[in-house]
Length: 420
Image (cartoon, rainbow, N blue to C red; front, top):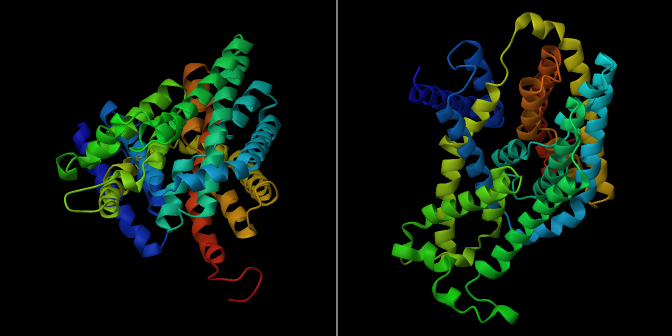
């Protein structure tokens, strides 16, 4: 079947998912995942997605993260980093240990347990942020705490992948110089973002850099307002793609770069035909949001759902292990991230519980680890692969369900520990 036909099927599934989400008052993300899983297992979509759909999916997650960053306030994000170190640390260590211990109990194989712990470490922030967006909670303190913690987790997880994969595969572990290079790339990326945000984008530069007055006439504001602002959407998407590529070169997922691109674009850079900056900023935001959340971004989640190809005999045989591992990671993640949010980040309990739920998802890095361990290096067996894939699937399902369930308590519609 041609790739365009696959895309047509996916879009049809997305439309059904949106209808069911509205009917059941759950986030569409849950149904996007279900559509992908259903379509691949009844043969409507192939087990190996085409390059076209894979590329479309990659563009989708980059757009989603850019749209989320575009809505966020940069000052809130930076302030949240100081509060989020404990969430990132304890919220990564606890699920790692829970997965390592559970899989060690099943297999008594240190390397397999090590890989399993690594796969269950990093949070799938894109899934959480879209779930929060669908509930109208994407600009809350909890959402910002989740986002900053997840980025810190990504940095640590990338380093762990570099260290632990060679150890588990029996290859030579990276040297101190190579580890320093990984950390250096992470620092370089964030320095690049700071330089762009402070000294490149602003059209009025203060202090020692005020001599760069050419930016008053040839800066981002002029680019966004060129031709009466008709190409402002193209300009911001180009900026997101460029920073995404920079993130990729320095070892991050491009979606992280896209999020940072959206984060550092300010309202006062925008000016359209006869429209003040605020109106133009909102117009561009509406277009980006529609593209990201309505017709390109959902392809990423449907594609994610297609990763679960069910072998029923094998599926039944691993149900006990999946149940134990899912429960272990579920509880470890919620309690570790929630308690850390409360006592190291001083978040209120309502926010702390929401952060615990929001850290449950497992996607990009998890599947990268599984691809390396199962497909490329043959470190884990087919049974373990199924256990980890199904665990990731149920954890992903838990994100929109728990967020939707907790929302009325979070917003105060229902009192905690009392009658409604």
